[in-house]
Structures are given as C-alpha cells and as structure tokens.
Length: 394
Image 1 (cartoon, rainbow, N blue to C red):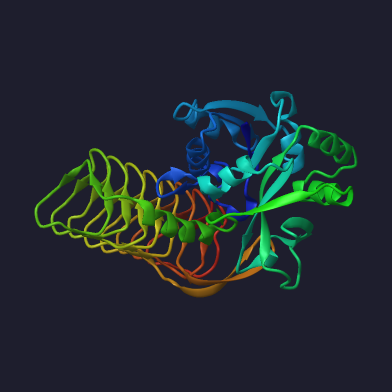
Image 2 (cartoon, one colour; image 1 turned 120 degrees about the vertical axis):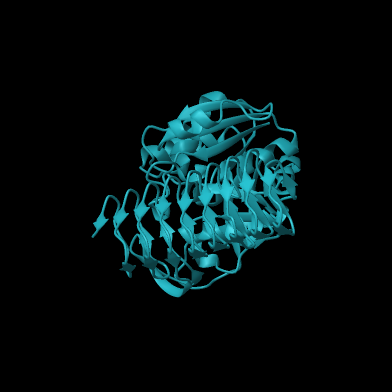
C-alpha cells in the first residue's frame, strides 16, 4: 500500500512564515512538519510515498531527495485548487487502495496502522477535539461515518475529520466527476460518496495535531519537545547548568554561566551565552547566536538568527535570518489577533517575526504583533501593531 501526502498548499494564515516556504516545511523542534509524517509512515512499514507538491515546491524537493529508505515520487499540482484536485493528480501513480494524509498535520504511526488494517474499502480517521467548529465536524452511526459538517458556526458534535483517509481506486471516478463541476475539496467528495450510500468506517487517532495559525507552531513545538532525549554533540564550558532533556547539536558552543532547562533543542553550529538562559519548550535552529544575559522561553528560534544581549523573548516565533540587536523585548500576554479576516483570541502570545528582519537596539514588541519578512526597525521603538513585509520603521 502507498501513502499519498498532500503538500501543495501555501498556508496563508501562517504568513509571513510561509512567504518563502510551504507550510509543511515550517520547523517544529528543528524538523519540518512533514518529516514527522514521513516518520509515522516509515514506522508502519510502508516504503513508498507519493508527494503532491505545488507552492514553493523546490523547497521540499531540494530538502527531501529520499528519506530513510522510503521512495518518494513527486507529483506537481500546478494550480492549488483544493485537496481533491491535488489527490486527482496522483491517479496515474496508483494501482490499488491507498492512504491519503495531509503534509501539515502530525499523526502517529498507530493511527495510520489502524487504516491499513481496516478491512473496509473506505475509511477515515476521526478525533475528539475541544474546538470542533474549526474543522469538519463528523457524526457517526454504528461506528460508520454518517455526515460531515464543514466548520459549523455553532458548537455541534465533538469529533472532527482529520483529513486522513483510505480509498480504493474507484474513488477517482468521483474525483473526476466533481472536478468537472468545480468541486475541489475532499470533504465535499466524502459528502457526495456518503449520499451515494458508500460506507466509511471510522478509526480514532490517539495523537493528531493540526497547524493552522502561527501560534499553533508554538503549541505543537511544546508538545513535540516532550519527546526529545538529552544529548550533547557540541562544547559546553565550565559553570554551565543543564537540567532536564536538552539536545545540543554538533559544533555548538554553550559558554560559561549559561542556564538551560529542558525540554530544549539547540541545533548545530550555534553559540549560546555566556550567561544566557534558555527555558523549557524552546527550539533553536542551526547557526544561531544567543548573546549574553538573554532569556528565551517557550519559543521557536529558526536557523541563522542572531539575538543580542539582555533580550527577553517568550511565547514567540523568530524566523530564519533575522537579527535582533541588544535589549530586545517580546512582551507576552493574552490578545486578539486578526488573521485573514478572522479575529482570534490567543492566550500567552509573544511576537511573530518573519525572516531576514533587522531590529535595532532597545525595541519592545507588544503581544501578538506580527512583523513581516525583511522589515527594518530602528532603535528605541515600541511596536504596537502589525508591520507588513519589506517595511521600515524609522
């Protein structure tokens, strides 16, 4: 059995982080989201993946030539019309029943194994969720799928569709039929199949996480860091205190007086300290520098980031290549954030800073502020509202 992974979308609600890379390549605990999907598939024993790519496809194709013995076949969706249209592109590479997964969801191998072992032709993974109205709410009858209600306005039901399916080859007849009618999403395909009397068995996922908004990156990063094991490949000077599980990459230097409390992952060729504090649920990418007397907590610091001395960062995402000079402060609190016309109330959120930004000395960023990529912010500024990409704040 083959796995089809849909990874063609952009992830507009995750801008500015997806302006130069597809959503599936955003890092969680220093690994692209889609790599967790690959790992889960590998554990089930499947050894062939059909990967449907589109937006910024070169980023994925350059990173994954192959993966741990898994054969990857790339299929290109030129126009990102929807998930059903993306799956239709894979038709010629399939000959028997197959699994469909989203490249931007994290699923464990046990959930996928349930689908593989399910004897039904059509099957779906569902999960109980505290906020079902964000997704397609599913209704069950005798353990079979009865109905999907896509993003209901009211809180109805408690189980959602994860978008992970097992399909037989004849599903492509329905995909082609609906494609001609301009229907391009898999939820609509499933609803049409249900109306035709097709039975979908259901399986529940113990572990499934979706990343829709920028703050989801922080929450999922915190969860995935619980799985890391302490290891040291770098150099640790005297008088460094390390508590809990901390993974330190090759050629990284932790200078004297630094204090690190896991779970924390620090990539390769980094410099931390002296006298820096890294607190739990923080990931720091490769080639990043954290200067003295800086404190970071529950944050994602991507590759090639420089953070100046005496800075304070909490509940934040700092994208690759950004330079934050000395005395930078990312305030953290509850606030309401607008994303693509939606207003979301978020607890304990810091700042969300796009790649290749330069922020000069003594800058304070208010909670929930989104700073686009390639922004330049002068010294002694307080940033109270979102800054568009390629902006200058003088």
